Amino acid sequence: MVRKSVKAVSRIGRFAFIFTLLFLFFAVVAVALLMMRISSSPLEIGFAKTYIEQALYDPDTGNHLAMDQVFLYWPDFKDAVNLVMKGGKILNKDNKVILSVNEVSLTVSKTGLVYGRVMPKTILIKQPQLRLTRTADGRIDIGLGDVSADDGTDQNEVITQILDALSQPDQKTPTGHPLSRLRSLKVQEARLMIED
Image 1 (tube, rainbow, N blue to C red):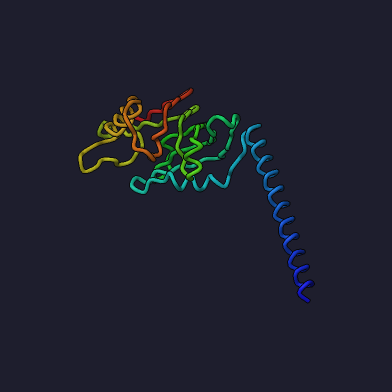
Image 2: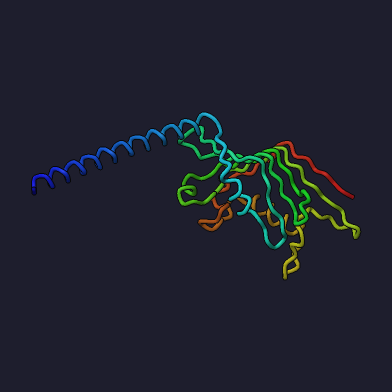
């Protein structure tokens, strides 16, 4: 009776071992096929679209992002991963388009992705369209909403701060900040629309 139970246990052990090996084999093959697919052409990752749109919602101004498609592309495994968003729009709380972009490409840090964070190294914006509105009192509104803080900063000062931060590459960004690895921002074929 002891021999029968030992044989049964050894059969179960062998079955579990073979099943585990087969599972690992198919997992490695699936990962290899996925890597080949990502390196050959962009892979649409529609499941990430909602997550990205929710992550970029600004509850203070009501500004939010809408996009048509999101792709993942990794042409060279030694280099960074590319995240491409097509048909992107930044909308205000009234769903009026502030900025529309044909395509935005982010070269993303692999290290950041391992920790579940999107940390772009390069941002390439293709064919953006920005809408400026001159209000009745003569002020220029770029659609950011009321961004004035307690210290009296207005939209122009916010834009100046952003441009200053981008123009000072030697300035240290805190470790772990989403833009701490950003090295370049490129804009191609921009269009500006003015409402008077």
